[in-house]
Length: 247
Image (tube, rainbow, N blue to C red):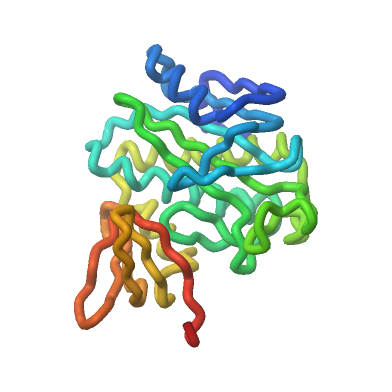
C-alpha cells in the first residue's frame, strides 16, 4: 500500500453483515484500538446520512468502515468526513484515473452524480467512518438515477482490493497530518476539489427549516457558509441540494 499502511492494525473482510459502522461502533464500546478496519462483501442494513438506507448488490461496491481515536479537540472531529472525502478523491485519481468532486458535507461525485457516500459517527472517544463506494454497478443496478459507479465512469481498474488498499493508504497519510496539525490542510484540499462552493444550494436543516442561497465558503470547523438575503449563515448540519441556475 505505502509506508503508511502500518497505521492499520487490523483489516477484516466478511461476506455479509448488517452494517460495518454498527459493527465497529460495538467494537469501539469494548475498547477496540484505532486502526481497525471492516470490509463487507455485502451489507444488508447499510445506513446513510439522516437514516437513509445505502443499498448495493453483493461484491459490486466497496463497503467499509474504520475506527479512529483522534487526539485533536473534539470540536474538530466534524472535519473527519471531509478528510475521508479528500482521501477518496485522491485515491480515485491515483488508482482509477477518475476525476471526482466533493459535495458538502460527505458525498463524492463524478460528473455530478454520487459515487460514494460517507458517514461518520462518534462512539465515546472513537469516531467510526463508513464509506460506500459504487464500483462495478451498471446503470440498471444503481439505487437512484443521481448515482453512478466507477465502471460507468470508465475507471482504469475496478479491482476492489487495489482500490481499498490505495484508499486506506491515503486516509492514513491525510489523517496523520490532520491529527498532528489540525484540519487546515484538509479543508484547503477540500475547497480545491469542491463541487459545492460557488453553487446555489437549498439547505434542509434537521429541525425542518429550509434555506436557499449561494455556498460561498467553508470555515475552519468544516461548516458550510451560505449567503442569503444579504447575510452569510453558517451551516453545521444539514442536507443540501445543488440547484441549477433556473431553480
